[in-house]
Image (tube, rainbow, N blue to C red; front, side, top):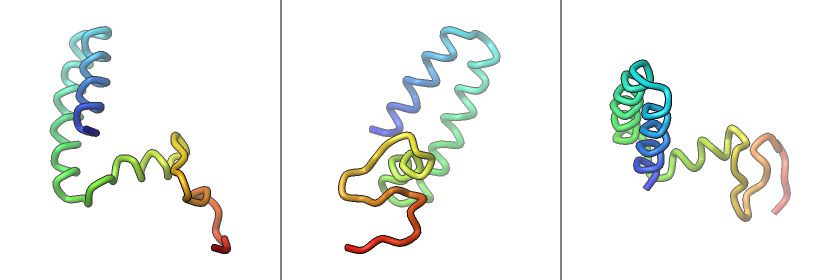
Length: 69
């Protein structure tokens, strides 16, 4: 699912912005697929969480160093 999201997002950018983005589209697909094979499942969601783009239910904030359960 996350691979499809990356694919559609970069494809949309390539269709809008032209030739340079087509090269970026191919490069992003290649490097994302290589990275995905080496990482555990769900690393995109955790990466977005780390960057602060999404909140995960029942998780503390990423930058919170101490918390009590």
